[in-house]
Length: 145
Image 1 (cartoon, rainbow, N blue to C red):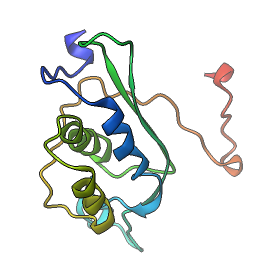
Image 2 (tube, rainbow, N blue to C red):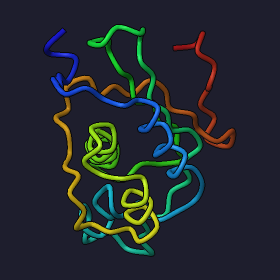
Image 3 (cartoon, helix red, strand yellow):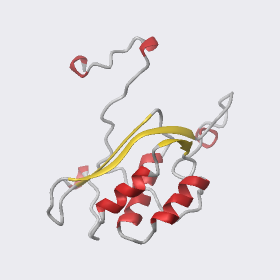
Image 4 (spheres, one colour):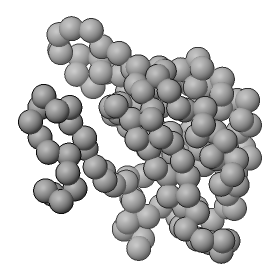
């Protein structure tokens, strides 16, 4: 399991983390949590934006045991490079009560890259599904995978 998860010995307030997750929902600038397209591909022509639409953000405790696994689940129209890892790192600070909900809200609202959250290691990061627009001609049916 060590290769596929990220261990944190500190107790986490998952309910508080979920309150923070609600602040991520909707169309907003996620520059605080990931590298902008300008940073990752400076030669790319056209407009670059950190605006993304977060459709779902939640943290789920596997069971009520103190050392149970916690899953962080995100669905968006697109992700910035490093966005999920840095978002989880910042949510962990909220869950450890090292960062208040008000501070988290300010980071989200201001797209503040200087906040204290750091990217968690990629252990356990898993792309579960990609949905494409119909015009791409790619099936979104799980049975076809």
